[in-house]
Image 1 (cartoon, helix red, strand yellow):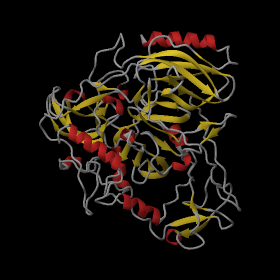
Image 2: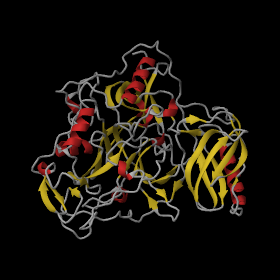
Image 3: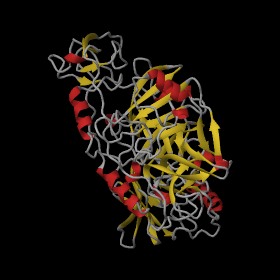
Image 4: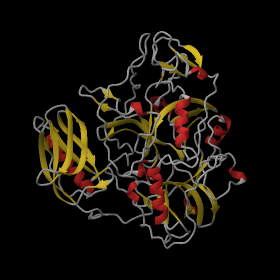
Length: 570
């Protein structure tokens, strides 16, 4: 039914293409069911920005489709799944409205109740990807990312001009918006189940943090050096590289495109028991605790997204999956990555060495969207990759899937009226949490020429990608005081991690030491955003204070997790 609807809409869109001198909306045939993709179209008379929304008979908004969408003269189109920021549009008869430059146009549309599709497929065991915002996939450009302004003798990189904040929904559900979705087999069964459930624990100052911190299961000898048991210490490059090259255990149902599906984790070895989490097929690893003939006890970070009804937001869970789905997969042996949510850095390992470091942004939770948290774990990147996609007005290039709907991609941009790329809303946030679950990566080149474009150009199937959790109690160390840093003594305003940098053409900087950063004339220098210069001690102190033992650096996520623990009867 949905495929027929999309075909009809495409034919109608073609007939509207000639009417590009008017503000108009392409009529929608059939009902829109929240959670199912539909292609919408409208025409505008000129380049600019437009809002698309549902309105009642009085013209009042009842749900948003897109805000501040960059549009071109003539026909524009977008996929919509009937939700805004995870909230389904209310059922009923409304006006699909496009507004631009004070003018509006509308067409009637009906929002049906969720789950009323006439051809709804029966539920299966895998969970769907999340449906925050469905996107239109873009052709992937092969050209290098454009360069930002350079630092010269008299002036460093000028501060970017302030622009309006844009709501970012860069956690994307799928690279084909019209694909059939797979849903969780069952709802949670209540709090009358028995058995152990995960708990929130609190460290002391002597805790050694590993990805399995908080697990009730002690490491076994054969797990030494694995992702789950290795201390999260990026300076131990030999141990990290050995961990990155180890085979991993994944779950594989054998279904087509299974890397975009999830498998339920049960509290007991029984499908009638409570569902306590989900694991993404093919790409996400599990820690095998007790393997049986029919069922296996595993541990992993639940890759729960908002639409599967479980709510175990990035919780380290222990539960059961069917043994027949276990599969051992070897990663690529030349290139791998570590994302550390504590430092907000991406560490590139190549042929046994820590090759380079890039600035990133992981997910930022809020009270309405605790699921924005980037899910930690051990993953294999999936190639062929997604490429570029739209997220409202934002465009995210070079996307590579690693966890169902979570992607590694270039820092988003919007298009200016002249078609040029504008990174001013998202680029200054690199190095801090800012996304809705995806991992944004810098597009500016490091001294080695590394950026997201470099990763895209070097991608191969099954590159290992691990994400370290910023457990409460983890702390950052200062760099050594004698570590060299660099600056331009002729009026430069930034300090750098190397003597040359893409922020300054044909210049070689003078060295000083990290221990001198708080002394004049270096105290007023700002960090370079290209070469990932080190944080100042005061900045590290602030992060460590936020993550100190006994504190709570993310009370929103903590509250959501405690609600989940109460729900499952902990």
